[in-house]
Length: 114
Image (spheres, rainbow, N blue to C red):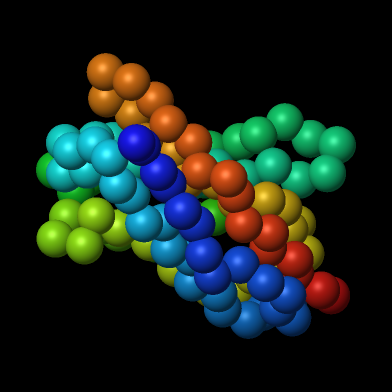
């Protein structure tokens, strides 16, 4: 059974940090392209950051220089380190796994207060 379980969301003041984790199980994590998406109220889900199986990363322009995605294949976990958070970073953050199939986590709420 495939599972992606996000954790680490919460309420943080603008300018502060927050670290998200996504624990994966039920598939060969090390071979999957892993991403973080977010969805703000009333908006479409958008890609925040992604990391290939080989460790290459890419980021949305809005988070470049502030967010960092990483993965630990030994722990089947992908991380999103978020710094200098802004109110516009508020939303539900979802973990996504893709290779031949695609999977979504249930999401974790991030709220940045001004």
